[in-house]
Length: 369
Ligand SMILES: [Fe+2]
Image (cartoon, rainbow, N blue to C red; front, side, top):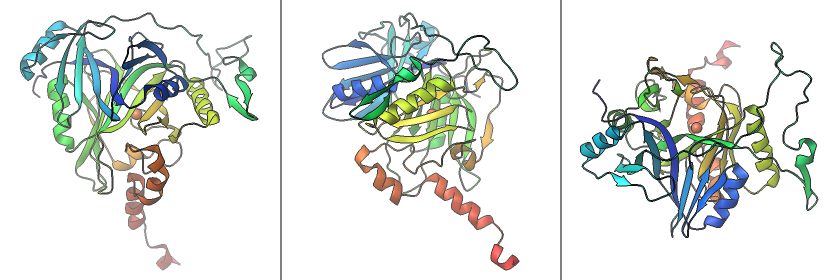
């Protein structure tokens, strides 16, 4: 394998253009992020972790995902990338400082690579200790989340659960690409990504994308920092943004709190969850923002070091969770929220394609009677 130009160490933030920052500020607060900086035309939201922010949006006349930002461990990585792509190293003028190189991926996604960004003090929260059937770790301490039952408050005669999730950090993005092989190669060659899972399409042969992780040698990293997906359905909307996945600070309870908060305030569209993925193994819960961009809360994902070889994963493993509700056909697609219901009713998703294929392969039960 060719030596990559550089090796990114993690994802830092996603960048958007939006027509109204105020309604997005409300959404992100309900989603469980914290406003870290605000300028005349931009908002920077952080999690409880060390990154100065994990979500950036700038006011515009369009609503668009611009791209993702990654970090590298050394300035020489930036130099190598700048030379390879014939672009300058720029001093970052936005909060956090440091230096960056901006390049464009094969699907026109803007990729910012940073070194030397100032980290921030984490926001502390109490660790939740779980007692399982086999292991009792919490003794003489009552389990109380937030303000316990007082998190339920009446609003216009409706019960609202006020405790939101607490996002810690951005963990990955999923992107829809024109050509899976081209995208996988680009991220491997330019940014050092390794394939964790190669996604095999429903025909059983061709790759329709990959789950890719950062190469940090012996250091275990998230199973995926990037998921490149080549869409199969001709009906599918070809929008490059699939979703962004944010790790919550606590575990299952943090994820569940966020679910019931977003559900009871009843202002946003739910996409998919709660369930546990197979590839990456994380528990997930996906919600649409007011513009139809999907954001995921996740917890308890797999960690792999660079020694683990890629796996080939069949289509049903990608879309069928270990448990959880059936995936809607809109999953992975970006569209205005008003169009979601109609889309889900009328468009075939990967789950339907796999269902159809498996029905075809079943023995004819009528002839067995
Ligand atoms: Fe995800």
